[in-house]
Image (cartoon, rainbow, N blue to C red; front, side):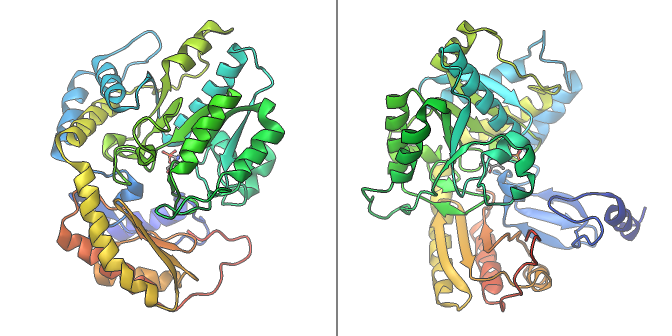
Length: 440
Ligand SMILES: *Cc1c(COP(=O)(O)O)cnc(C)c1O
């Protein structure tokens, strides 16, 4: 098929994320990608300023990851994980245990971030049941959070966010207000008050707390004070509640240190369960992991059933695990905190002047994340024009235009990204999204 025939078939038959099938927004036909660039069928090259939804940590098609998948594919692409195990899974679990916070070394491989969150929630409920607290079968999450698109993960995401349509099929959980004290500001005495109230009222029903530590990504693009995490840890210890950190977006150096919760200080806010995804395979193939402490695993295993009740078909797929090993080897061999610091400095300097623009509400930068919060999103066609004119791929949503680039993006491309963000920020505001329409 010619490129235009391919696009025509796509338009009529393929769903895209958060898109209509009757009036789909235009899509680009990508044919190859390497380093920070994506190449289109017509020869256009775009700098990927969003690391293809934040997973392409080392640049597209990193040769070490491609080679790891190729080598594994020649031996064994897949084998069921029920009744079998294999070296790629064991090696990846070892690498994860080595970099996870102390005490977390029991690994469950899931096929996507959303599933890793579902698994964490199920672990929490099974843990409480095994510990003799069967009434504790709900979680408390934060407003402004995002934990994925499957039902349980949606139910833990901002209750007024993009998932309100599905309230009827979602389990009900509890929510604390969005952590209001910004990262870098002075902590305020009542900064944790809302969570204290929720636990005061419902503590006996709560199996676990879940949050995206420090960086609320897909719903709020918000950086908050790490003291919040220390308060969470203290309260969880006091009340026998498990603490789940969803580091699917923020983990693996996205905010600077390896884990976003490291901002709280060494050992100061260690979770009982950690979810990792996105950058885990460096953007080559889908894989996520839910890593639990020995205490969680042993308590579940002492209960009835002693089995942990989850097991996807493609669990611990060997190709994905091989990619994960290669990606974590790249993280280990490089200085990714330094990459994040380099990107942070570039974004801080480049984006600061945008604060003066009339349509800019706020500019926020932490690690390898640069966010421009607009007062109103420009028209989609104007944003598309900026993308083609600047050659920088952006994917704004709600009122945010942002960059979360591959860590290896060279300075010259970072400057082009800053230029593209500036061009979007300077566009006239578009009309408000139609009632009931989701702006993606
Ligand atoms: C992206 C994301 C998820 C969901 O991951 P998928 O792989 O898209 O299912 C969950 N939690 C956070 C914090 C995320 O950013």
